[in-house]
View 1 (tube, rainbow, N blue to C red):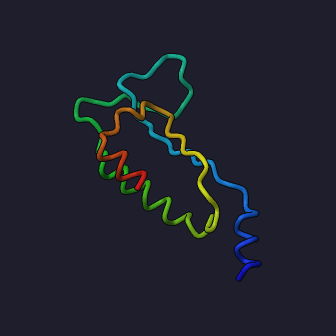
View 2: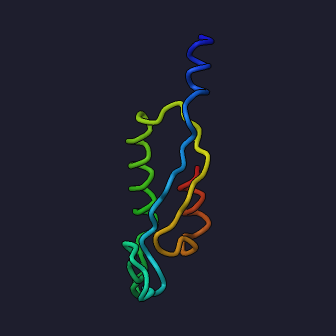
Length: 90
């Protein structure tokens, strides 16, 4: 048991990037895969659900590693509602 605990602490921590592809407007200099939010907005709950599913699918590949940082970018992450951000991070 001690060997397993030592092995887990030897794994490097993860830095996680979560892509958020929507912006209020597309900046002319931006090369990120991002899109202007249209009048109807975007389906936040569906996007968060897809992200969580993707993260759960990848979890076995990184089991035992601590997440050191989470970067949310690509578009304008502040467009996420507080509930959407909470759902993503929990």
